[in-house]
Length: 212
Image (tube, rainbow, N blue to C red; front, side, top):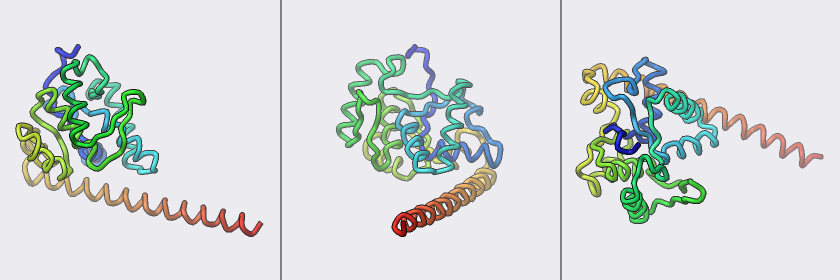
């Protein structure tokens, strides 16, 4: 199975959320443009799940979007324990890289421990293991990490991907990015408002318990 897998871009957490926003706000679906498929690391799905638990609406919707794309075979999850994705040599390389870059992973629990830039780092490590040339990341941490450890891998942010990989003009790309950022800001404000209301409700319950 591993031999049949194509050379596709790898998408990190922040980019996947923006990719979902592009579809929602401007009907641009990068999973259906140019490439047959996109790779999404297991660490990205892990981060989306954690953010969903913390009641991040956008992360929850992005996770549902990921599940839909998996059913359509437009996305392939890169799971370190998947023998069809990584052979023993590649897996040993990945585990050594995890150790070198303080990435905690439990094979028994099949889970990561949350850490700064987890999705970006794992994406680059998987790209290096599979000799994949492109990682899609809108987080500056990915380019910084790449410039030190993985100089042979290209990292494209959303605008670079839209222009360099999908043929959009700078003007259209910037217009789309502005719409995505506005949508993210609106969602963040909604999250904060919901958390505030929830906090007030919990405070009211505590006061009620004290009075009783």
